[in-house]
Image 1: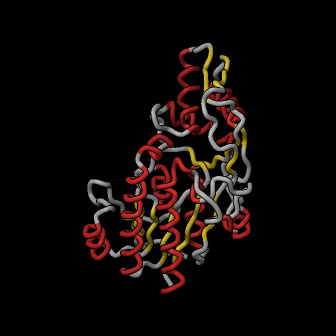
Image 2: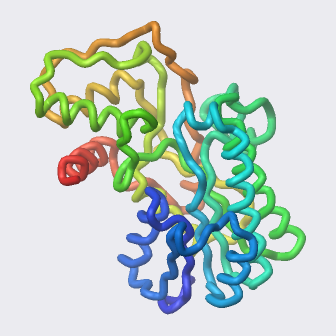
Image 3: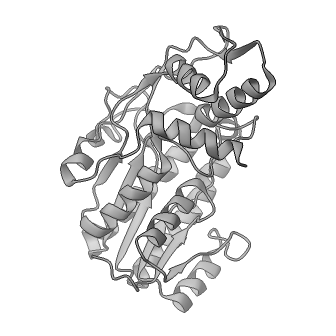
Length: 308
């Protein structure tokens, strides 16, 4: 168990996952939490990260900071997504190891798995096939980060856990109309359409693909649980446990937002990967379960969006 006075460094505390982790640990009574903005500490800068660790000496580290973006950004700038995430990870993981951090949490993404992996996706499917081409750079970086933690654990006893969440949504999500993901994009469009009494909305694709969505607070709960209770470097999937079609998601969000108009689908637009469901049975067997239903998460997210 982590002492309540332990010094915890949360990397990326302003992002969606990092801010959720910060809220969770504060809620649990942890007060000695260290954070740095990008302006205060550029995690890509090896010398700066080295100086930070030698000065602050955090006991626990949660790496939620990363260069992230939507499909278009990943497809257009794969070199930057690979290089910058490798720089961030190598610096933070290596300095955590060299400065004898008691425990390290690496957060990745379901995109580390092959694009044609059997469904639901088990942890054992890692590196058994080609990656999704549109975000291969980011995925390769996350695979390398996990493997570095794993090798340091096996070779030197570095205490690291690696968690791979499914599609996330919730507090502090990105609602930018140009590069947001499907969940926040639907939240924004249906809330605004309801407010403006828009008669109809046209969405991309057929609505047939299946997706799994997990509220970011459940990921923070998983980070807290595994930091307290787990000491194995093998990757662990963190998912909701079931998926729904994009059409069903749109209808649920529309209903919760009070939208009464028509929902049309533009089948000339791409659907993307047909299905991506994580097998999270390993996490469940270890004692973690998601707590926030999709219905509750949608209701909460709409309220937060309206209050922005």
